Image: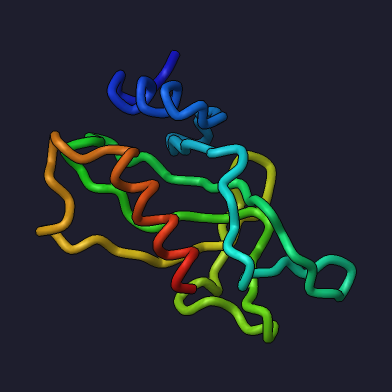
Length: 134
């Protein structure tokens, strides 16, 4: 059974975005299976920074979504800048769906999220922008 609103499921299907919904310990997460990663971000593989074409994205879905706004997101693998430093406000982690995710602290102002109107389409644009400016 899906916990995403129909509008979000339709958007993801229309854009051919592969995703899965996961529930664990009273938490719900939407996992985007592959979002492109800008060229200035890397993953640490066996001690070496390597280019990454895509990353999984995790968005935790709060109770009351979409009147309740989304808050922050997570990536897998953990991403770093070309110089090896972490992106701003992206140093935490979360264990969810049997894996460790990199926490990207990105809080939306109340005036940015329109309750009952905005959804995954708008939020994925914000995630793309956060990755591009990291």
